[in-house]
Image 1: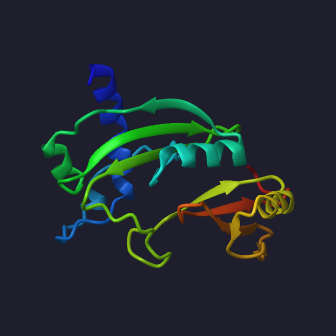
Image 2: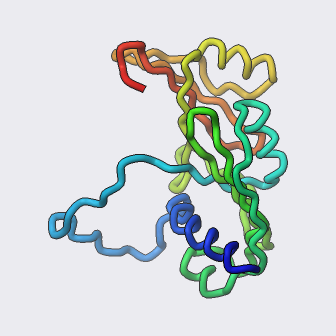
Length: 188
């Protein structure tokens, strides 16, 4: 693997590590009052592990117009990294693809292979389960599009007291995705 691939992998994996389950041994929380707050101002991207990266890329590209901005096959991952990131020893990162949507939001897709990897999507209430929430200006039109494409809809749109509307649908491999529409008087 060339140096650029390792540099890109090193830059993206710490962010993706947040999608992994919490360590099995309890750790003391950091002393939050002893340091200045982390200077994070926005979410850059969301990482999703998928069983078939080509299928997932086609799904997000066709559904949302997401375009591929990087596509990397990193090669063999050192065993030390597997330990640091709590990967299974049999695991190999096959490929990762960064997609960008028109509004600037990015999704990073990871495809791993290995005999110990659980290919079953966790239940929505399992520790480590997550969802992606995407904003839309037309929630009713988005719902109609998803239904026309036979995408599994988990609930009809709900309107919160503050006017925010939302519903969930499911990617073909089981990831839950939320669509959110803000009221016109709320920034976004």
